[in-house]
Amino acid sequence: MDAATRAQIGRRLRTKREQAGYTREQLGELCALSPRFLANIELGDSALSLDSLMTVCRVLSCSSDDLLFDRAESSEIWGSTTDKLCQLDPKYQPAVDKMLQGFLEALAKSDDSAALRPKRGKSHEKAAKNPV
Image 1 (cartoon, rainbow, N blue to C red):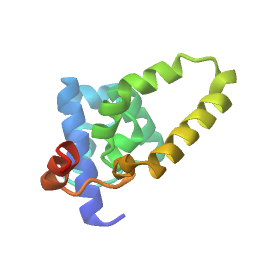
Image 2: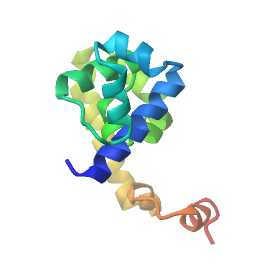
Image 3: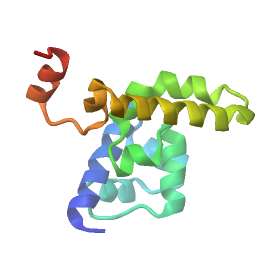
Image 4: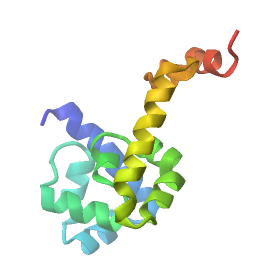
């Protein structure tokens, strides 16, 4: 893993830790990691093992995607939808998957297909909200 990626992960870890209200000492105690090691991770000087990553995510109540890939914003936006889906009996998963696939195909065919494209900044968002 390159230094820039370690630094990004470290910044996200620090943000999540602070949002949860933990000091490095407290998080370290809960995760069986030293505060110095957590500091090294937050500074991008060290990397988490898979076991440590799983433990930290469990304690901070976040996904590994939140730390590794900065998917927190997307998780927050879709959180209530995800919560509803998680309440369903697993036997409904194939039907829900089929419905979502049909919905995505319909979106792709409609004028709203821009909803499936990556965001390109504020000017793109304004254009999407105020079509001509």
